[in-house]
Image (cartoon, rainbow, N blue to C red):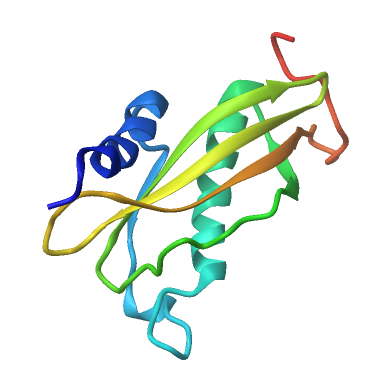
Length: 137
């Protein structure tokens, strides 16, 4: 059994960030040559989750323009439930930053574990793919 500090750490950030913006099951086609889930697949899930939140906030299309450095703390395994939690950190005139935390739960059940986090920057774009003001700012 984990000590109370670890349990608090594992559960605290999830509650603060609310419901996941995205949930997916890691599948065999998403593995790297070592049999673990490919980091690029995980990054794409995070970008989809953050982009969805940014699109909702800007009330339209967005494009990813930057991703801050990420560290993969734990591997993700085939069958794991992957949940991405998002929080808008900053909204500017045409762009916003979204913190994305990724947690996994083993297929057989058990506690969620934080595997990575990153900060994604999105810019709101119009039909011609040019920056536009974020609505409501």
